[in-house]
Image (tube, rainbow, N blue to C red; front, top):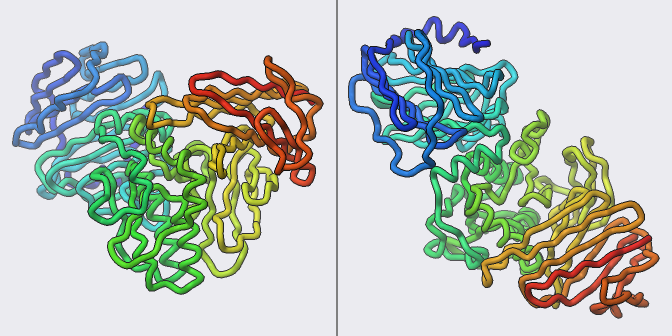
Length: 520
């Protein structure tokens, strides 16, 4: 099966070259063409670099990447390279690139010379969605045109591409046409098939230094980490501008920008109502700074989320995932995910729906799964539109069933667990360079919760939507029932009948494994 490029490519005044000779050596295919040269360099079993020059020298090969040598076959008109995951074929007649996984086509593309520029034509399926390139009016940029020097994007077909050169590029995503402003074109292709896997491949080949916990403080412009990229410093004076800012944060994350930084001074000239909503939103974003003026964020919300944000700062360094995760990234197989440019996931566990219009209500469409409003403890079924009360003071925040959410509360850490699916959370402890691990698993009339703590800490499990237990116990003994929330202490449990939540408190020592069995 081959992709069809359509009428546009047929009528474009392009010239295609043929292969004159080839050299295959150590995972790199070098081609001499009748109008220049080309090269495919394998970077991993799921990624490769393609370079095409029309007359001049090829861009230099990468100096650092995984050593991988696919099987190679020269079969008359096709040059074929195959790893465990990908097959890449090159047509000798026109240097067209065919990429597939097993027998499933992923993408085709062809480089050409036309109108004094090197060009790349990517075959797109009719329903293929495209995300990245620093965005436009929608999260899905199919149909839009951009001028960019560096261009990262991924598509719903399961691959991503990164184009970078001294010259800029024009990306016409209505046709899958990319025009370089120079005489060569070069890209890296990553096979996913999910957005996260694509971004992880990109980060492996373009690593950054770690952004550490102090970056979560309110910074000055000069204190921003080098890895942080400042969002547009445009004054936000209207609801439309506030919504556009949230859309931009989403678009940047889809463009593999792991550390967008927000300047709080952009809200200084806004009305009191917009400032209040902007403050609610800002307190939950990872990197904040002020280029001028005064004013901070809600310290209580910020402190509660700090260990959670630290964990995802570390994951951004380890795996390249942005902390702010638009729905097309987190739910990449859900065709409806692109419809909401004004909501996003913060890490894997938290769905945020900032208020971006006058009033005290917020309407949104929940993704698949079952969700709980963290503010009200109300459960909602996913894949439906809901409207919630949203007074100023806190962004509507939802957690899906099966997740564990760690929050700091006074002198302890709360571990909010939403049964009835098993869940886990690995909390990064930067001062000991280890993860504390939290696990929860239901089994019939029992729930088993476990803490492998790297630090001395008081923990309070909060099991939501759970009836009063028959017994709470560890191997060392049975927990006693506290008469009220105020009397809860390590070794006791308390059931909140009004909220239908179970609270279990314990004190953990460093590098200990604490298992609590709860029977109903």
